[in-house]
Length: 243
Image (cartoon, rainbow, N blue to C red; front, side):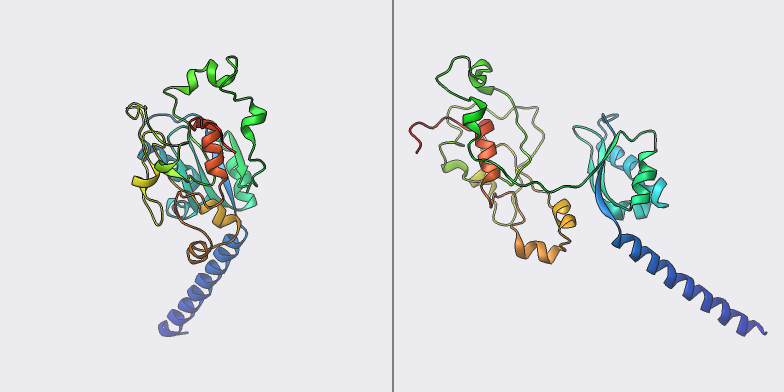
């Protein structure tokens, strides 16, 4: 066999090997599910460094840091340390054995259940022993709501900011204006921030970006009413004689 033939044979085998690798990679991606990997307290306040450590940890399991970045959907680095990533069953098992991992939680979709929260929570303005009155109406507390979004805005008596002081200086978030969500219309000194995150739902429903844009409003605007309901239950102003 001459050198030319040897080169062709080697090239042929390389092509087969490359094709097999691509097929295996696609098969692995098809078998992945979304998981949240909880790592406990964040070690420090350098957010970029925390995210980099997440890539390093996932890279130990998937083989390369570059691949880890592709599989990671979110990096949680503010209130705690953790990340969401698309993983196979074997990768979940392997990550779960790492010493830094506290818990691995599969991605879940939740359905809304109620629109009468005020009643069973006992949030009465007249009752001096109610939770709201005991806590001075929650003065100065920043509440984070993970739900379907926020609606109504400045024109609503529930969410207007009349009589409120400045936004607390410790607040580091933002009100993100996007698509049909206007920061000027929906955010004020009562609603001090709004963001939206959709990748988990897209993964659970097998939606690509085009399909998601067709089916959903890609913004913090509430299109079901539940997020707004939860927000005014937790932090809305009292409105008298509501029917």
